[in-house]
Length: 79
Image (cartoon, rainbow, N blue to C red; front, side, top):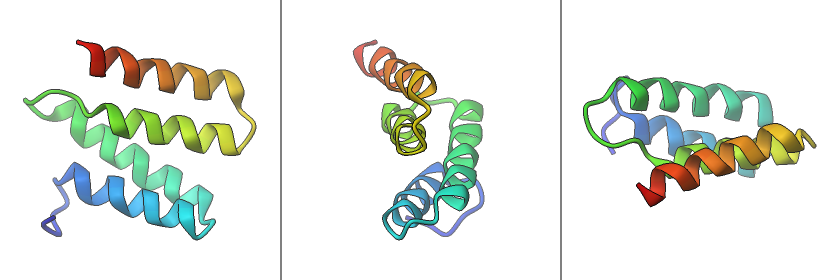
C-alpha cells in the first residue's frame, strides 16, 4: 500500500486498525475517505469498504444503517 492520499486501501486499512483500537469516530472518518476515493475511481467499487462501514454502524447500535451498508456491499460483490 502506498502512502498516497488517493489510495482507498490506505484509508480502508487505517480505518480497520482504528476500529480494533476502539477509535471509532476516527475509524468512521477514514472509512468515509476510502469510500469517497473509491466512488471517484474508474474501477469497480470495493464491497469490503461498505461491509466495514456496516460493522462500524453495528458497533454503534445503528442497525438500520448497518443493514443498508451490508446490503450495499453484497450488491456490489454480486454484480
